[in-house]
Amino acid sequence: MTERPAEGLALPLAPEPPVTGAARDDGARVCHASDLAQADPGLTSPGFRLAHLKEELVAWVKTLMSAAVYAVLIVTFGFQVARVEGQSMAPTLEDQDRLIVNKLAYRIGEPRRGDIVMLYYPLNPEKSFVKRVIAEEGDTVRIVDGRVYVNDIPLKDDYVSNEYRRRQLRARRVSRP
Image (tube, rainbow, N blue to C red; front, side):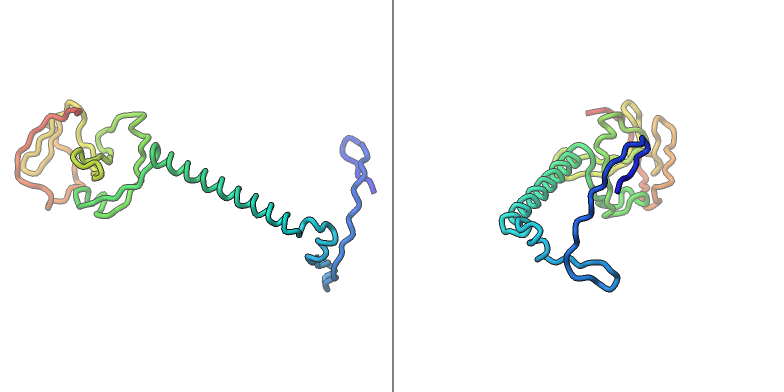
C-alpha cells in the first residue's frame, strides 16, 4: 500500500507487525509480559530494568536539584513570604496575615507614598516590620491631636481607626539613613 503526499511522491507504508495474545470480545488483543519477552527478551531483563530505574532516578534528582536552585534564587532575589504581627496596619492588614513581598520592586525604583513595605528592625535583623510609607525624603511629618500632617497638609488616613489616634504633638523631618 502506498500513500501520496501533496508533492506527488509515492512512499511505501510499513506493514503492521503481527499482534500476539488473546483476543477480547471487542476484537482488540491483550498483550502479556510473556509476549514482550518473546519479542525482545532484553526488555524484561534485570539489567534493563536496573538501567531504566537508574535513568528515572537521575531524572528525578536533576528535577529536584533544579527546583531547589530556582527556589533559592527566587527567595533570595525575587519574592519572600512575610507575616504581619500586630494591629498597626489594621484594617488594611490584620494580625497574622501573610504577604508575598516583591524584593525586585525597589531595586528598580524608590518607595512612594502609600506603598506598603517590609523593613528589618536594625537592632534585630531577624525581626521585620510591615508598614505604609507616608512621607518621602525631605518631607516634614507632624501629628497634632491624633491627625497626621505631611508638609503641613493633613494626610488622608481614613484607614486609621479612632482607637489608634492619640492626642500628642510630634514633628520630625524624614531623612535617609
